[in-house]
Image (cartoon, rainbow, N blue to C red):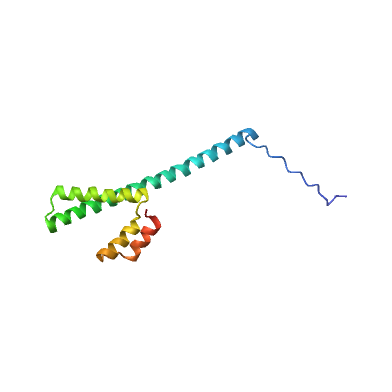
Length: 128
């Protein structure tokens, strides 16, 4: 008489190829590497932002100086004074004495120079 009931074979325990200590070490190394990559990514973005900001400043300064020379025949000495004065305003903004938005408002109120609302929004978001 054959028995239709078959005994299930218990699954064999799979041996882990690594010890607990090795797995913990891998885990710690993984987390440390992930943290290093995150810091590197943040550094790259910050450096790229700073470089883009520098590039923008250079382009704006050079093109403004070229226009002032071409339109009004400003000489280098006068343009240098303008750049130094502009740097004073940047210093005021950095020290919190006057914000860029306040400077924009002053230009608009006193001299009728209007800025695009999109530019004002950028200054509100990122400006000093």
